[in-house]
Image (cartoon, rainbow over all chains, first blue to last red; front, side, top):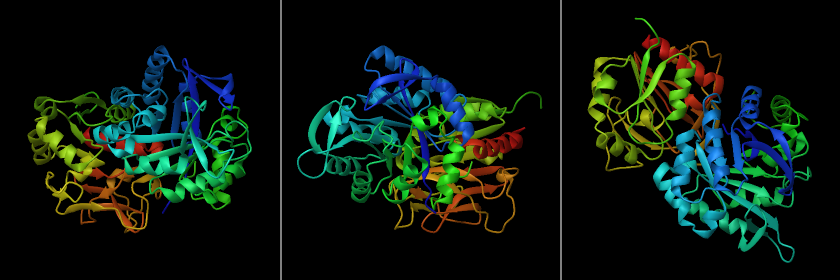
Length: 254
Length: 206
């Protein structure tokens, strides 16, 4: 049986959960450990923390957030943001993370993915890809530095290269949709799912519960990720899962 | 016995062991990571974790010097729980790492998941007990509990297998033979079901 995972995502900076539209205009959404516990109780299948702080102080804070979370939350935890070398990955894994997501640093040095996979296993090497539809021509382009810097690299080709290089999962965010509540970029999701044999997490744009269903059934994603619809209690995880289950998605009930 | 059961989580340099330690503590065990044979011998129960590749884990276990302690614990009959690659290490060998050998408590070779499904299986899946009975690890967990799997290889289904999951066909998920348990999934990452299973193991060691 194939089941779909529902993953609340917490963007964390300086020890607080924040949310912005297209990575800017950040607002405070609460304490990450508290939110993580609430999501666990509500039936989250997994949690993702993205450290959107660039500073080294912020990364230290993140390690402690991960450690405190791991004391009370017993579901898988992915942590990304600021992971530049295998030592960064090691510290997060030791603190209690199960997977680490790399983004900018993997584009600068693709061997980082292989290094993490070799050292800790493919299952904990996640590559986060921030992609945007090309303005001219077909396809999607990879962006780095929190979605600010274009790379010229094709997102599907990059995902394929990462999978061949030992990645265990792709966390795929549409920069066009992130924060818009217009739903996932289903074409992008489908293109990456069809190109790689590893699990793909769809991210960016969820505003309704039907968007979660579409990500799984139309986009073909193995997991669907959302942030603000849960932080602001627009829906509980339980409501989301009931809706998904009654619309044809196999998912662990709460 | 007085106090909480002492559970030794074998720390042989592989992966995130903090979750296993914290989850066992959460259900009442005096769990700690141990890397010396004396602490293993003194424990009321032993957990052999493992993530990554079979060969890397087998080598790390040997090089850590803890393999004799693990074998002694297995021979003593103390409650012993192999998790994920720690479960696979209970078998003779693995197609993932042909040059390496496991502990060989159970016969057979660990092989890849069935074709036609994604590798790794990285998802929650339901446990199915073939004959409908409730094996000791699953007591109190309800029917067909959901647990979290992350793996590309799996041991063969044998007499020791007490629960499977369906992933391109039946896949060995849980074994129990007396005090020796093994799980392909991660109980320490399986929410309430996983904590319930770990509580059952801690009770076994009490």
